[in-house]
Image (cartoon, rainbow, N blue to C red; front, side):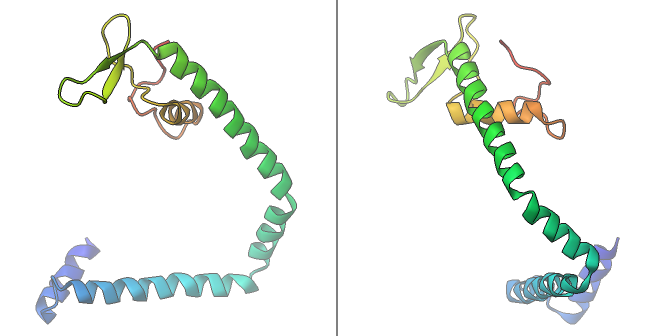
Length: 137
């Protein structure tokens, strides 16, 4: 609703579609964000949060390294298990797609794509790229 009013004001002033004017607005919005970070130095809660992050940095590094290692391991496993046979594209001979034994194309085109699928399947906030809640092993 407020965006409609802002558009009406811009149209009344005569700068509704000018990209330069929108760039100026973006800079003003960015300055407001930076100002919030400057104010946060004086808040005790923000200082506690920063100190907590500093103290737990080694534990977070170990956690992300472990997640990365398991993503690499299981991504490689699912890529190898789903591999199938490689069929070249008739339009572009060096390119192609891996096809399963039942004739369906595999969604895992590379190990990084399989790693992304693994991490997206582990986390409850996002569904895997193919839209299913589980894989096809």
